[in-house]
Image (tube, rainbow, N blue to C red; front, side, top):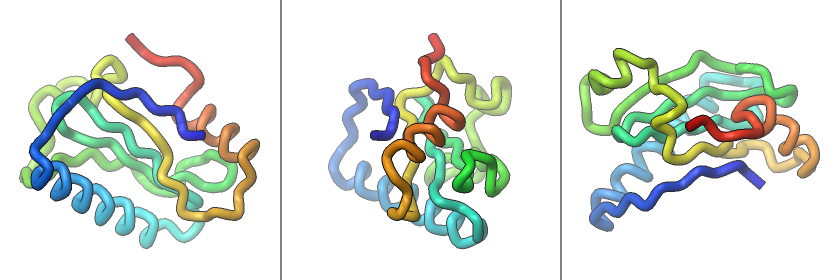
Length: 120
């Protein structure tokens, strides 16, 4: 149901697992700090940075937008310059925390948060 944009990016299995665990931990932290959240919007960029924010049941922000990069003290220079431009998105989706939302509600939230078209 989540809108996804994917490019072929291959990583070593151990590195990919570490990135996945780090991303899951960040999602958990965002959910924990956002009591009204039903999910977390995740936008992965071609540079390896990620933008994330919690969303509520109406598709409104339930947290601030966080940009981070695994195992780095700061985001990359390109993200500092363009704030993670949509032309560099490799994948975007919503990680749903609450499973009691119906598919129609999820689709409306996805459209509101991630949009209905891609940016190129």
